[in-house]
Image 1 (cartoon, one colour):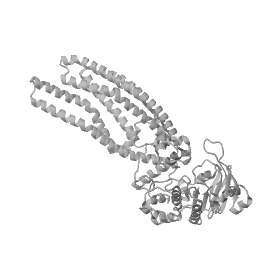
Image 2 (cartoon, rainbow, N blue to C red):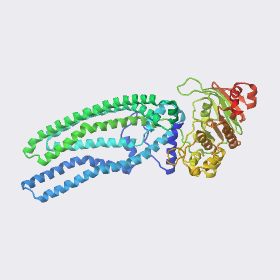
Image 3 (cartoon, rainbow, N blue to C red):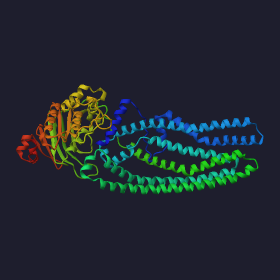
Image 4 (tube, rainbow, N blue to C red):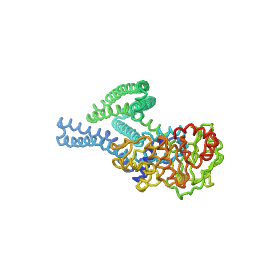
Length: 619
């Protein structure tokens, strides 16, 4: 379950700051419109969206306005030089041109600033939307490999996705406005030139679109190799693998694999780079030809006086800039739009995933008297093998039970079904005689406190690491309750000696952070479960990282903390199982044996065989 750590942190953060987000409306259509990016932006960041949109429109029409301003200044300069106008006319038009030049200099900065603010607000809203949605996806779906890959594509590196989509749309709109403005200006002064320019530029667009798609496909293929290479780079340089990297000496072999994958990606990327280079050269040639053609076609208008010299120079300058823009920049815009479209398809599939009701409101606390598995069978999705095959047993409050068995016997699956993580099982799981599937996620959450074998290591303070398991707002958890949980797992002296006690940051995220050993992290995870006032406590291999002497102490702490509650212990270390009220032995997906420690040892069956193998550990 490590893949949901980030979501938990995000939800905790947004729960504290009280943010709300308006989600994109789910529609039945199969295709996702790129304009949904704008809809989401307006709904969640209306002010900055409108400011950004207005600035982009002004920025787009400015080149067309500059044609007239530049033409008036050049004509005034010629007239003053010829003695037709006074110097005051030149100063007036020069001042106006200077003002427009200043505005054109400031506009990109203003657009960039508005974009930064919009990106920040949209990133906050979008990350919250993704985290909220992901927290409501049933566990069974997350366990599905295809769904998990979809979650990774949508949620990994999601920051900036919404802003990127909006920016791409506005950039495309900017080019359309600039193209339309200059073409209309040409059409007003010379119909033939206007039509020719429009036709030539329209012919360029499909070529750029095709080139943009080809670039995207090439980079997409290259990115697969780069992702593999990045993984190997993490293995070769990461802290988690440092010890084994030194011990096994695999760096040389890994380096060869990295070079091979990175080299393949580089070759694929170079194809796109080569295509881009060729496109630049072709675009430059087209720019020269189109600009030269327009210059020639407009010369008669200059000679007969229908087009002034200033207007001629201004139009040619604007056309050269526009043609260069259309032959190169539009390819990049199209490529970005293709990426946004591909992401949006994944996003709409993600938003259409099944949800279950949020578990934030458990409602009335259910007093648990018993949990019964009645003839339960279960197979994981896309797997025909039964993990559990007609399993039946009864668990009663006030007792502790041990689930033991070899790997693959079904112990963890029993817990997942008990927690309501999977609902498509055959048979019945009854809580106080009520089928478990009739209870809400909130009710189930209020019943259980769990410590998993693959527990999360939150790089938060000691206090927050434990208080997060209380089932209430973290800032409402009393310090006394945290200290009591710390004491139960035998960490009081160790944490008291830390620089900031319970407020000491764990992990390496902060400079002053303190890392823990595997056994100490496991004690923190157990304390996180024990701090909750739950009806049922489930401990999945709670002492896997502890030595046998510490194991005995932890089991004593756990039994004492459970006091009168229902406790379920999953373990391979059978010394702990000996301290429970009843032991259930699973084998080949069936209940193979069950009974007290003494009765099972007297039976000399599967449990006795396993225990005798481990007996030396406890002598």
